[in-house]
Amino acid sequence: MARTGIITFKGNPMTLEGEDLAVGSPAPDFVLHYADAGIQSVTLADIKGKPTLLSLVPSLDTGVCAIQTKKFNEQIASLKDQINAITVSRDLPFAQARFCGAEEIQMQTASDYQTHAFGTDFGVTIAELKLLTRAVFVLDAEGTVAYKEIVSEVTEEPDYAAALAALRMLV
Image (cartoon, rainbow, N blue to C red; front, side, top):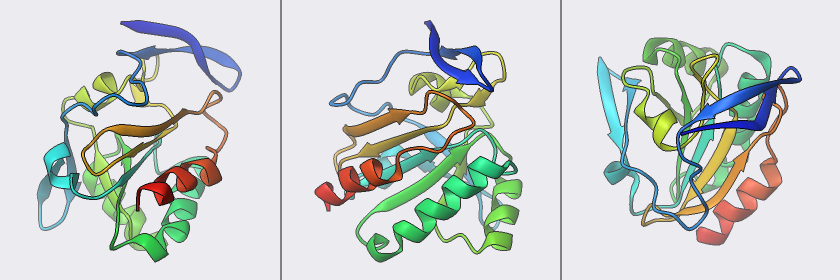
């Protein structure tokens, strides 16, 4: 299913592919990949047991995406043993690892580059760009969506305070 008019990119309307994942819904199963002694995977089953912040960005190599990742990285530092925090993009896992090393990012990054299923299942793939839109999901320890923000203008930052408040309520 395609949804138009939910987001814009530099003022231009874009189309999101997939269903609109509602708060209260179980998160779809997923397999994302990251670089750590080769390519490794992380799944929904891997993160269950702790609340999880999923910070979605189009590409870590852009200004706003870098800012979003750095801000969440700083603001979750005091919670790091109590939560999972993952930045998700379609950047290659090696590019994500390079970015995190250069920027001293501690939060995990993971990529939807292989199948693009995460983006479709979470309803966050920008059809015209084949990238993930800017969004934040907070999942409870069982994998249920407790908070969701799809940023209406892709070039703008998310509501950090609201996402972190939702995450802290689950800790």
